[in-house]
Length: 382
Image 1 (cartoon, rainbow, N blue to C red):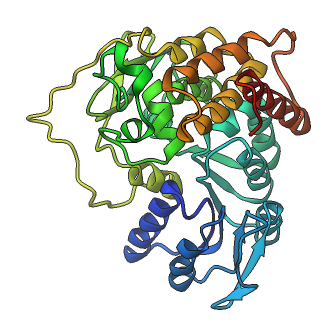
Image 2 (image 1 turned 180 degrees about the vertical axis):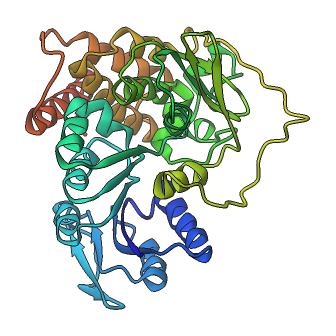
């Protein structure tokens, strides 16, 4: 039976790889029909998708984008709100939330209410939304399948397990600056940071990989997904080990595989089945498995994430200040070390006692507040 799929962020890294996975799956006899896509503004990248997949709706979030009202029988809608209205109208079986940034929390909540399964690559939804995401999923009987390679790995490792988790181990590559002398950090250019040694990702997540803010967000994500604060981060440079779980009898289960996002994307779509993917795999005979401890002098943002783990308000501050700071770094308004300084300054300024929020409007209020504070610290507006 054909399954309807909506892809939020279809022209981004996750979206493009999702489309590639769907081509592969459909060639194997699966039936996945792309009924809707969304993008921010790059209309020229949407055209070939429409010509190949014939979605019913294409939503362009940028209200100022110059787009036709219709193309190739696909209705073109403008404005961020058109994404949610299209999801509501289409009621897709599967919604892949592949866009980055806080505002996709709204898309995730809408997808939970209107889809049977949400393949979630937008970590900000969980980091900032916290328990409201999972409470909504329970209320609407919606599956949330993580797409992040680390969380997909843990999700898979826990299948069939009844025993309590002793510890989760999330791995990190170390990012593009893992061997650069610390004294050179102040002069790092965005171009240098964007040269990731392993993964092909979007700009923000690549910068966050270098600072390990991304890993901090993944720790927060794991906290909510797997209901534990017993989490450790280790560096695995080749990114062949995506995560590990230690159980109460001392046994570790390790997820070992090719660092290719198409694999966890495919798993999230076909779960509980595995599909046949010809994307290669690690060489068990020549690739040693080596872990390294994290040097928090190099990655202070990750240490900060552990310090605030479990406090939703501080999670929101951490994410909002980083989003703003990374944008400023990419625009060459601040240096790379300034990213951590801004994130630390904003999270340290929070003196409210709230640790859990249960309202989307309130979460959005604090996100905007902390984002604004970040720009105010350097004396300017967005």
